[in-house]
Image (tube, rainbow, N blue to C red):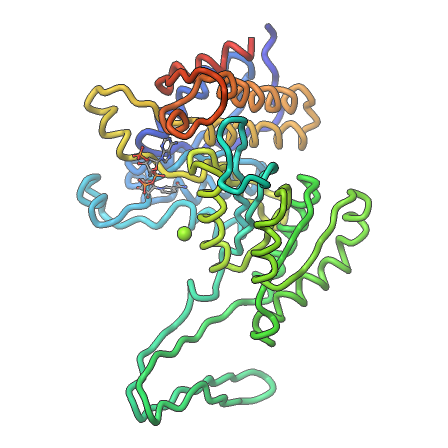
Length: 400
Ligand code: NAP
Ligand code: MG
C-alpha cells in the first residue's frame, strides 16, 4: 500500500509516563504504516523540560502558531513530590497552561461514544461538547477575611475618575470578601473560538451565564457574544444550518439534561470546570474524553483529556501487564491529522483519520477493549479484555 504524503508538518508534543509509551505505540502500529508522517517533534517529557529550562514547551507552542496544528501527549504537571522524583531545579509550570497562554485558546472537550458504553442519561445519544473559558473569574481572584466592625469597598479608577462602591459593611459580623475580573479581550477571544468551532463541527452553540443577577459582569459576557455573533457570524451560521442561543445557566442545565446532545455548551470558567467533570462522568469514562485547544486565530492543539496514568505506569515499570485505554490519544492523533488534511487539501489524510476513528470504535463494539471499558461494558458482544498493545493491533487489523 502506498503511504499518504503530508505537505506541512504536524507539531508533535511528546509527554510522560504511561501515555509516553502509548504515544510511541500508536505511531508505530496505527500511523506510520499508513502515513509518511511529517512531524516537527518536541519532547515535553519532564526530563527534557528540566534539561531545556522549559524552553521546549514555549518552542512547541510557537511551532503550533507557525504550522497551525499540534497534537499533544499527556504531561506531568510537577508538584513537590515530582520535584524530588525527577530531581528538578524548579517546579515547572503546567505545560498546558503555558501553551494556552501563548495560543490564547479555548478548550473544547467531547466524549467519544460507542455502543455498549452507555451514558447515565439515556437520552444523550450524541456527544455534548463543553467549551470552557480558561481565563479569569475566581481563578484569578483576590480574597480577604474581614473582622467584625470592618468594611469592604470596591475602588475603580479609570478615565471617568475614581469610584468607591461599598461591598459590605461588616459592622455586626465578620465575614469574607472577594474581588475578581475578566477582560473584553479574553471574552471576545472566547466567543470567536466558540463560534469558529461551532462552524467547524456544524453543531449548535449554547451559552449561558447568570446575567439577571450579575447585571454588569455576566451581562458583559452576554453582550460581547451577541455583538460578535451579529457582526461576524450570523450569516455563516444560517448558511451552515446551525444556531446560536443564549439562556440563563440554570435553564441551560435543565435543557442539557433533557436534550439528546449534539451541541457545544460554552461555559464561563467556573461553570466549565464543574460541568465538564459532570458531563465526562455521565458519559461513562474519562479515558474516552477528547480535548482540543482552539485559538481565536485558528490554531489547533489536540490531546486526550486524561493525565499520564501514573498508577498504571508504576505497574508497567515492574513488568506487569497494563491495559491502559489509548482511545482518547488515538483520537487526538486522528483529530490533528484530519485538520492537517483539511488545511492542506489532502483528502486521503482526512479519510484516513475518519477510518482510524471508525476502526477504533468498531473494535470496541466488536467486544475487544481495555480493562477500564470491560468493567462498564453493557453491550451484547462477548468481552475480550486486551492489554494496550494487543488492543492497538486489533484496531490495525481493521485498517488493513
Ligand atoms: P490520570 O492520569 O488521568 O489518571 C487517573 C486515573 O484515571 C488512573 O489511575 C486510572 O484509574 C484512570 N485513567 C485515566 N486515564 C486512563 C486511561 N487512558 N485508561 C485507563 N484508565 C485511565 O490522572 P492523575 O493520576 O491524577 O495524574 C497523573 C499525572 O498526569 C499527573 O502528574 C498530572 O499532572 C498529569 N495530568 C496531565 C494532564 C494533561 O497533560 N493534559 C491532565 C491531567 C493530569 P485506575 O488507576 O483506577 O485504573
Ligand atoms: Mg476541575
